[in-house]
Length: 280
Image (tube, rainbow, N blue to C red; front, side, top):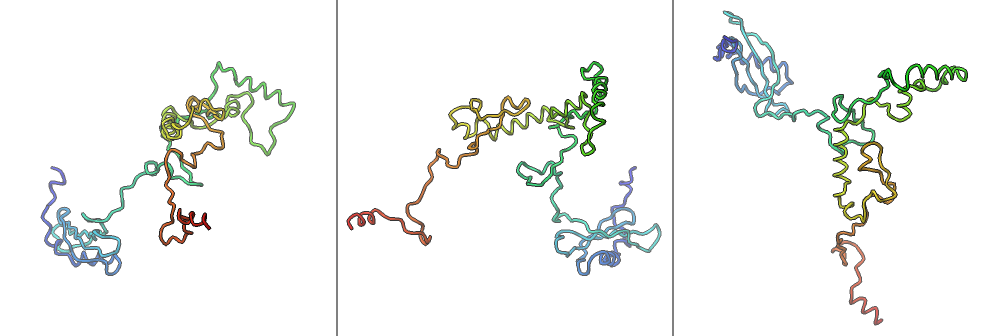
């Protein structure tokens, strides 16, 4: 038989009558004047009862002071176990906490904000960090690097003290750094697809700007394709007039001929005024 089935659901009489003892414990834990009326009790087990008192503190609507009292077997003295402030059934609670990685949306970041990426971000995968040993049959082996270092020994004993120590010449790390590939993580295939979908939706061929263009960007001399596989579909426009148009010629903008009443503007010349000026 489990412990839950052995608990008594009928409150112990002496513990249930210890309302003043429980109130004193609540008033000792709370600020003066915030412990309200006794609003009920519940049996926690054999000779264990929790008393609830209304909380009158501002900002804690629906919360209750919960004081648990108990007594030993065959004892008539009731003692206080704990006094805490707990939310009631209709208490005002803070919204459920959501991790920052799920709260942020495009456009939430501002200048100076740093956004660390999760270690398990599916959009990224390990890049070349230079820590991996080259394959035994690599064209750039450790022997070749040692040879290059030996040839340079006659020219300089080492790099200048003000410069960081660069990877050994002829090593894979040196070649990767020269090509801009020495990064701990790079875009994964999933990251490439999500970026392409986002760019296609915001700047793709279905946007009004692209639909109104006389030709595709691929035929324009200002197109600078991006590196990597994304360069097959995306590029950077080097034209200084490439931002969104200031005047939209696809719609009609209404311009009132007369100012609104009490606007303080100079009245617009009417046809009658023009006619009078012509006869003057």
